[in-house]
Length: 465
Image 1 (cartoon, rainbow, N blue to C red):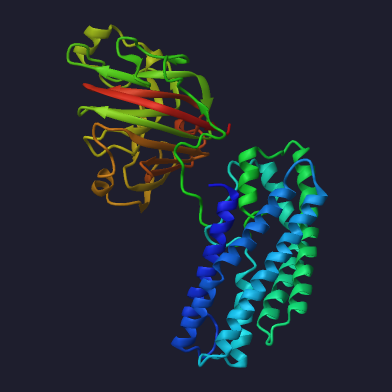
Image 2: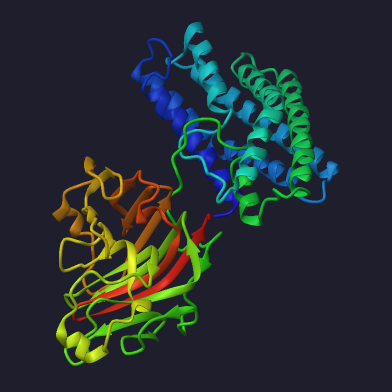
């Protein structure tokens, strides 16, 4: 969706919001059902001209953020906004005149309330559902906050000028000269705002905090500034890889280290397979090219059969193995190779049992620290406490796909570790012990356990440190 479509959609939503507001009374005193219906229809009839106005404002924002700066284009786009404001005001004045000539005529106090509601509804801003700017660095975020501050007075001038146009459209008889003068004042205020925005943006783009093209596009969709009100987060896009690096090239095990008896690249995935004839027991394939502490990792995982697996992170190799190893495994593989054994946190994945999504500390006395459906607070080997439930363990298990691909996300920030499967938070572990093995930088790896086949693909890491 491009920014023009977003701005047009915003216009439709704004009109619909006004209509709904007035359908509830919207602060208009003693409004009758018939008056509500008339006002709602008026808003619907204004949709086309409101869309044109919102699109014009979007064009101005895009022009202000274009490089190099073009003052002539800024002035032209600002004047287009003034013309569109006038068109909206004239259309509104005509629709309002028809209401006032009907049996649904509004009283003076109702007109005053209507003008106030319409003016507030037309100002835009960072309401719920506003589009955010992706993957901002701290420096970029500070710069955009500074933008809000620097442009505040210009934005207020624009809002005041727009409110004046709205008020003029509710004065009868219609006064085109007054409407045009007030719309021209909007054009002047918009040009000043765009000029200030263009100057700030040029400075930002010449600094180390320069925005990437997708961030600029999001800023344009936001109207040129960060949200200032309540906003909903954008939905997760599992295929968004901005700021991420791939841990698997899709065709080889470059960077990976595991027993070739069990691990291979096949069909765009890392495949681990343990069979009755070639049993693996617990064994791991380790990614040696990256160590990380704070990160977000996205990957897809599939188990075929009833066995289990998991994704190791912040983990180490070379540590003595504390669990028994079956005799048939030793007969098949020889003495345990500690370079292929991992100790540390695991995002568990065992679709046939209750473990998928839980937080498990592999090869340590801590074991399962947060079962699926739990938010747990603890401190390493010390006591842990259930702080809350994320859902019923069995019901959450229904979201896990058997013999099919599952989307898995691991978020690690300090001592807070979050496991998400197919968009559902499955477990949260907060480990407050800085010396805990859960809180050390480490390696990533994939486990195979028991007789099964595990496949992992689309491994993307956003490493913070």
